[in-house]
Length: 288
Image 1 (cartoon, rainbow, N blue to C red):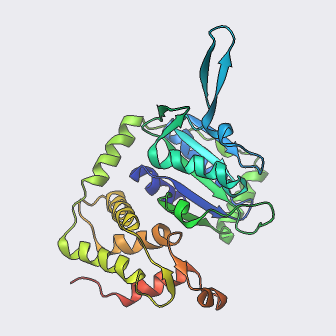
Image 2 (tube, helix red, strand yellow):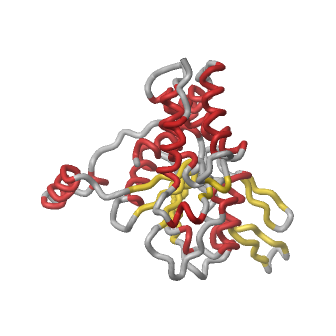
Image 3 (cartoon, rainbow, N blue to C red):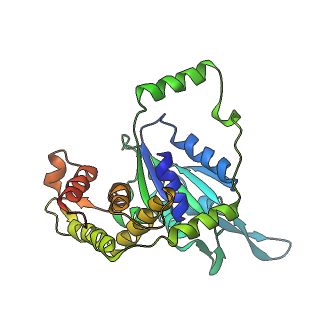
């Protein structure tokens, strides 16, 4: 989870984190915000939440006889949206539009968001009552979909030992990085070079999703651009100035799992996008 969250930040994108309750989704995002020294805000998704609760609202002033715009929590650098699928569709759409355009338009006036504006949203895959699943068109706004499972035995033991020692994670000292360092890292990601053969391999992966018999809706050109960006971030993380096919393979599942729609009969057989993408990758020969 942490590795994919860092890739999201290196790319300047947004991430959707899916996992059962109690696996530290919120804690991880809050710790990342501390590490980056960015202005952090959190909103809790509820069924009665209105777009104004996220974006802000215009309030009429009796003194000036004018409307004054009061900014909502979206005007921050790092926004955690807990249980986004509990928000009604209208509120989801308002948030996701601001994520895409990095601005808020209210009463005909446009308000730009911070250049470092990043959204990490969480959702619980097991609860359906009182939830509003995100449509595919809105899921496409997220650069990555990060799935969080249960920890390993060793990891869970370390968690319990920390609880026995009454040591909270936020008590550990963190030396934050400056926003300028994050900007430099993002520039480095976009400077990673890609050979024609590797680009052809990436395109083959994207185009194969549109022909694969298990998939009814394949990856879009936006998905192709996202896959290229995340693969570049994988290369930069490894200290390389060039892209390898393995970078594309590593980025493919978290980048495409929420952008593909499987055929109903395939889902009934117990297949999920992760397995289908893995099968698809195995069928495409690597460039020589």
